[in-house]
Length: 223
Image (tube, rainbow, N blue to C red; front, top):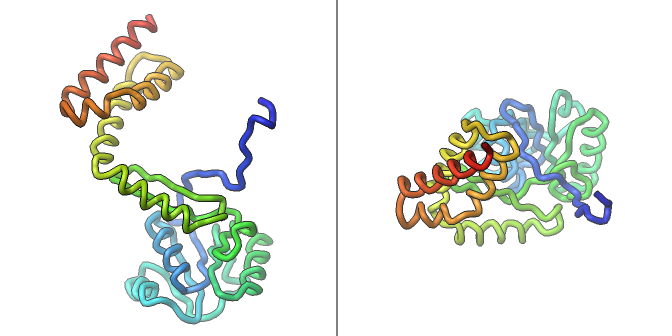
């Protein structure tokens, strides 16, 4: 593939497992609180370093959900951390913490400087198990949030049933005798077919029968 065919981007959209992972958060304002709540939702072990905090963060600390050190952050606070979320109002302090973090091999997220970050926090839409992360490479986070709200309105409440349906279909396809390439191609065709409409109009059993027919046809072609 030629380089001209590759769309360059700053950040790679990935799913990052953070269960039990130690994360240092510097800054106890509203931005820091949003970051903390996102991290807690993923099971991270959060330590907050800030002389003060929002009422929400204080409540999380009182409940034992996070550890709060009511002081300014120090370089030594980064020891043993996997990620540093830097969200203070002091740009000079933010830069110093970022430099110290990288010197210790700690990934950095700066709320005030996406260009100085190793990762960004996307706007997340969570609909009954379907998670959509939206970001603009840090160029316009508020626009990403607006897109998330619009998608939430457009996708509605039917996503949960659709996700459960396609999860069941995937189990059946993966358990079939089809090879890897054929399974992948069939699952893509199913996702792009009229199966969602069948599920909505005729119900689970009818949609399942239609999907089973597609699987049978693909298995017949593979013989």
